[in-house]
Image (cartoon, rainbow, N blue to C red; front, side, top):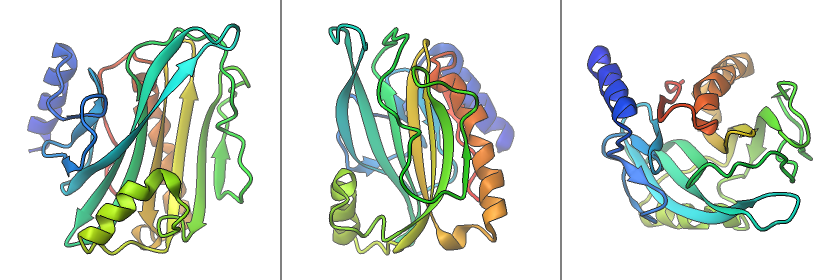
Length: 225
């Protein structure tokens, strides 16, 4: 089964085709039947079954010098639900095309909360890259969580149990080749220890860096803990 899955990913990557959810064309909610989600030809293959594409937000990336070169970006909000219980959440951001931006503004790696682990990978202000691991209490159940309001509405409407506290893993990469970010939420009970959480998180950048740099079309997301 593993060999068949890997072969499928390779075929999709070589063909440039995607058979899953495209954030630029759909707003959800819908099942991610084949576990593939992203924007256009650039996608992730999600681990396990039960993934739902709940909603999206759309924005723009732009150059810092004249602010006249914009590229639409889409963030898809997904959740893995098994037996009406929240197993994982993912916010994945990708652009519609290569923005060709050499110097970025904004500080995605600057945080004002306590972290369990952080790695800046030698990134700079104009080309930030970072991995941030933290514990967030009442993160998903907070009514003021504007970005996740549609997801919370879907959870409520479908009787899904959502944990009040979660581990959050964030990876951001903004380079001259492309950009993207992933924010993953797990129930605290998903990991036997924070060290195990850190080990899982450290595998994320190597999986996603090529996708965010638009060097590969599809990557297999790290397996569930």
